Image (cartoon, rainbow, N blue to C red; front, side, top):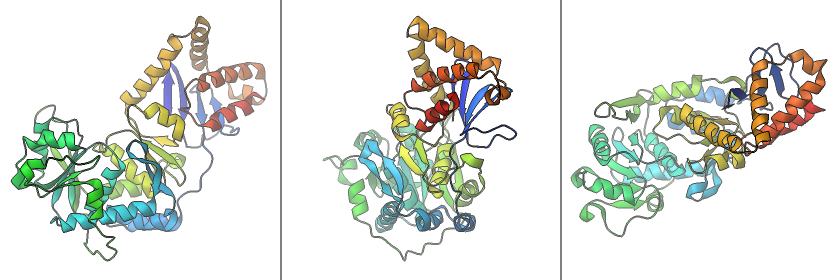
Length: 401
């Protein structure tokens, strides 16, 4: 993770810095003027798990290897939707298998598509894996998209069923969708409305009802291959109608198996705070990779993101520039609105970050300057409201000795 404050850049990264002395996780480099935190060593994924992932023919097959190694570990935490304690990988498996069973009971079959219009959540992932287990397809979009855009995606993907985030979105879509084309509707969050959708012509289920209809189908034998389509992702439609991009199981499995991030790669006991939308392929791929290696995933939101960083102390994040710019703005506003002394302190740190520090001065000489700078850095980090892990402050204290 990297955060920029003024022109100073504090970078947390997982790969080892070659040819530079390591002192309890911190290295100060003169060539790039940055402080790099090397997280504690974590055991890599086991050989059997790596071998299993390489042999998977479908996305859903990854869970067998994960369950063998991490079944009782917490997989998903969704505090905004009643899962603050989280569910284990084994509980997740039970949910998506019941979901897959219900989908078949309600008349969907392999190769058919379901439109899923919702923001990211634990329930979304359960449905996603239930569909993929059956060789079914999902076409995905966020709940804030215009009704006509969602209607176009439903038609273009030839969907036969619909999942929406809540009743509010369903009511918005009732005016543009033909009920004769919808087998059933699943509401992912909250209770369903007392009023039936489409004048009662289409069955509507809450998520709890939907899961309750299913069974844990251990002997289910739908064959899903790498060449089968898993999902259809749509462009935003800013230059015309949205354009759908079908991705196969093989497309996504290639990323899960082959993407390597060195020591920053998701690992067991790690924590991934999810903030990007589930219809963002970058986010979705990293979600799969993280869970495939036993990492705990926490669902966040724009409103709770800063608090979640402090509470869950993620080992890695996936973000876009706008996300980190908003964090920078929030931190910078605290500094610029403070006392004259605090402003001078920040200005000093910004200037110091550009002047560079000779690594030798840490090891041999001029330790007073280094202690002073590290003390200032420690004060700065303490003001970032827990965005960095507690270990960082411990390492700074060590270096000041």
